[in-house]
Length: 152
Image (cartoon, rainbow, N blue to C red):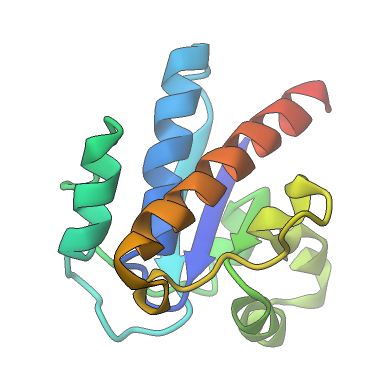
């Protein structure tokens, strides 16, 4: 299984999801899965995740320090089995770029939470706890996707 997490700039939500899912896969012994993250925009290409993102992740044992932001590429649509968008805007942008034969791979990251919350909020607008709130949702989503995909 090859999973790609996508947010806008690839410096907060999607790299956090990548880090959480990699940790979950490692704990489950699923070393043959591949996980990556990207942004729909190239604002931060080459930059490390936001320091607040790294701090929230590190407080729960996730290391994001080796990650660098990248923008989604045309080849990603064929390369990955599932492409998980952080919010509806990201999903619309992905659908606009995605070849028709790969659109079935696109979904919202939180779709697995069965309607509890459908979009992953931007942590920058969540006040002092925004990054922790987003991390809570990402952990729940990663657990849900891992469970769902292992059943399939």
